[in-house]
Length: 415
Image (tube, rainbow, N blue to C red):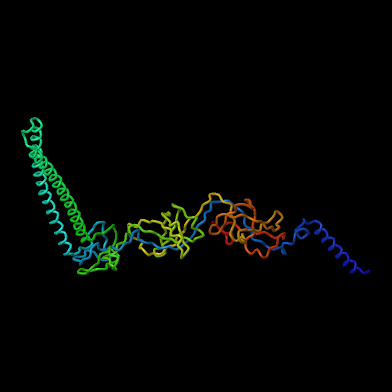
């Protein structure tokens, strides 16, 4: 063998020896483990930790502001508008005069009622005089009868029996006249009461010629002008036109239509956060009242929140986006919504075992937030759940977990 061949063989032997030493001297890797797949071939799974924290269930719904009170002001009696003092946009106070009506026939009726009352009072005085005369006559007749009867009883024959009988008849007659006069007096007194009632009625109707504001508010509509003939608002046979429309805008009602599925979760005093897009302003309030029944057409329950509006920054009719807090948990065990699959009343999640194997687990859910849902049973704090597309994972499959930190995209964020 030539020297060149010996040299080549020696170099090859040295190379094999060095490679063997490197192979047997290295530390074991996942590639040598037949129980775990090679990292490059394993499916990567995004996972999130089960954690505890404060959580609430909210409902975002559109609503609109309405006046706290809003009424059409009608005339109580029919007549002509003599003077109207307000116009659209005027702020009025409770009891302030809005308009005056001219009703000539009502003035005449009131004058007649006053005269009838005076006549009835004069009749009482006349009947009182008749009663006094009747009582005087009865007293005299009764005294005469008593004296004649006593004289007849003390000495028979002194007084004729006919005179005694006539005196007795006169006594009874004058007594009847007293009763008659007293009855006439009572009738006169009742007539006074009737006349006084009529007077009060016409006087009250006369007061209605002054139309006043029922509460403090703003005039939003004016339907009549000076000289307009308005019908009585109490008449059911005519379509009475109101004089003005008044709305109370110092307080407003925010009216929300709550869906049937969530109506049972509404409670008085529940906090409400409201965003007014027209003003780009956020305000807070509490549920003031709710209908406690559903509208048969829309299947919603009307819920109202009161807001002070003394500065007039909110206008009735403005739309809002309201967020109601339906339930709150101070320390709820929750998972991202993307981790849960629901079918009817059952729900499942995919969790990773200690060996990174996929396992399907049934869970019981509680309240749901914007991005997380409460887990009542089936999981414990610290468990890892798979989030994202579940169709690419099979139960028992080993995956390479990639933990998503809370608050990062795809983690579900805060509830």
